[in-house]
Image (cartoon, rainbow, N blue to C red; front, top):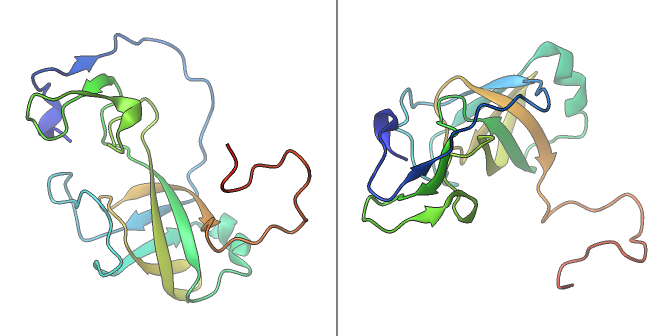
Length: 165
């Protein structure tokens, strides 16, 4: 991501002044060792530093059944990302890509995701590795990772299944 919101050669911004369609409830905060976007890794790593996901008290009962070793998908709001780039040049090499073809944090709705393994839990604090966001990032949601998730009901005709077109 470009530092300080500069526009690189080949990038295109949207002239958007629309209204907000929905509200998001932040359910916690993420604590990492990185305080700026430039310090933050491009991708989380399973052997990365231990980070803490702080779930706000209201939402802590929802952690029932979340145990050590669980793989979690973490969804967070990239609150310092710009939201107006349509075309991006992520490597600053003059080759542009459409925003929706990239995993860049610069998007109309800057929602980040990481898959992490829960190393330990202390009350409403989850200690994990694999995040790639700055300290203080708002938490949007937590879900069991799709790879480990077993549906509660058998599939029905028409349900999407891996391998189907």
